[in-house]
Image (cartoon, rainbow, N blue to C red; front, side, top):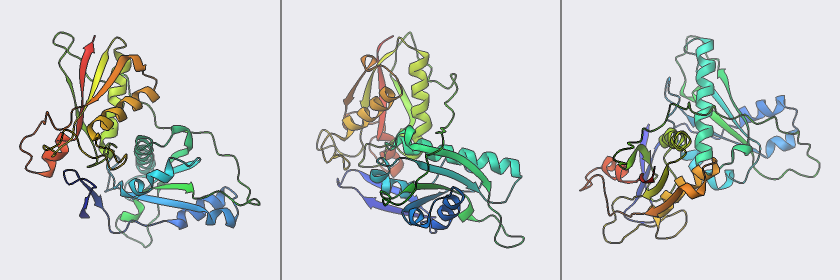
Length: 306
């Protein structure tokens, strides 16, 4: 794996991704899958596949750069298929479950980037891919999830079958919630919730934290909160540049992202407000490493009523 650093639009916020050398536009898998569904060659030509890759036995962390690069397109597309795969190492039953968990992780990340749950027509694992040669070790190209979608509107003579009934990842268990100190009403620090540098979108590994926050709001229906957004690095201005919106309110937009996520999941707007704190309250100061900066790219909760 190669670590690649990319400069954002603002000097104070940097973004980086772990990228794999063999990330590819996998149209072979799309051809096989769509041929099984009875689509014509014309419609296949209009289909794209993004492939993201996992380490051996990993089912949560993956290289999200291919999705990040196309997120603006994906949020407009209906009928997205998310198909998980594994290599041949391990039992068939284990690989079936592992491929499903990988697909669910990618589906959650797509939803965190603005893709509607209704637009995910298939989220499933297809188990293991047979090795290309006998006695082959596990192949990185087989440890992947394919995101298959219609790249453009079909021609007038192209038949498109109705999408299957939507499937979605199972919701977190009710016990997976933050504990609230009902005596001191201390701020809730959302450990693990961090953001891509220069952007108001959370990192891929942050999605379980958002789900846990949602369960917390459901568990404590009387809880009201102020969602506080923070940034790293910028100490000359109050806030930083949001490269997604082109505005100087990055910390506010991070808080607003969490607010909108909760509203979309059914939490009442009357229970929440959001505010940007800029870099006025860093958790780590001075910031000496990228880990320090990533720690300061965060959202915290202030309890306003319980």
